[in-house]
Length: 405
Image 1 (cartoon, rainbow, N blue to C red):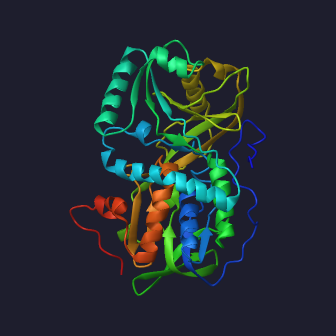
Image 2: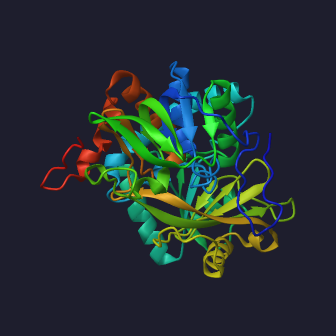
Image 3: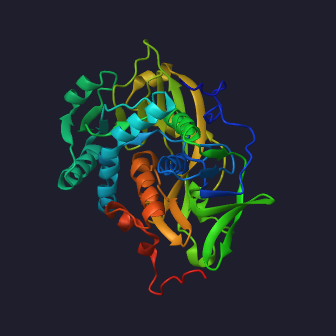
């Protein structure tokens, strides 16, 4: 099933349809997941598969935070930059899990997620960009990533629609992508098929504590008891009021604006994800071309701006002249959940309380390994080895945080 895009060019991506308007919550579940985005649904699905009763509590609608605003890149090579070596083992491990995750998700939901293993082309225009790209390529090779240097002629042979001014490129063949709308629709269906309760417009206003342990959540005027609470509330995870100060999370929103273009036989499209220093472009199976994304450290400031859209269109037009003839299908903004070091926080914060937050721009890439790590932590009490470097302890000041009691 292909989800419709918004009918107006000035709109936002729609959340998966088919969810119940109102859901009655039980008195108790094994696991309450706070947040109905990609990470929350992936964790809920894995926990339900492990035999747990699960309820997902979403403050707005499923996917309304970062999940439906994302491009869907699974691109550890293109994303790799100075300082991100500690994240690389987790990213590569998760990429290896994606084919099995895809197969299981498509089987459970009965729909494709438009998984595309076409690789990424990272482009350079002009001498200065070529030198910066050579530095990036050398970093990729030192880190053991599969990447190949291409001259301008070879880049244009692979992508004939690019401008002659494209001087060089790096091909990252193992970078893949998915369609976020289809992934979120599939996860919603898979969760419901596994017995997960999906409750929208159900903001969690507090945690219930008993003897130093989290024993449930408060939802509006009611309460839901839970053996474990999984905090997966994305960019809102660092907001005050829910967690005690001793357990505060260094997570903030990093706004991004994106747009969808409609390609035709006349305009042409791309065969790969294409990155430049200004934008990235991702072709989708329904003929759409996603162009993203701005980076704005402005808190929860909603909406799209003329400046943001101009930057996206000009950045795309700089290398792909066909965008001038493409219809603008939709524009939107969202909030990346960004930790202080741009890596996720996967941890048991207190007895009965688990965090899976701070995935920055790698939520789709890291979804399988995050879901598996959270399932292990809830069911066995321990994180797998690959996830252990990503606990909250890495942010500890010289004066250690006090455990909440």
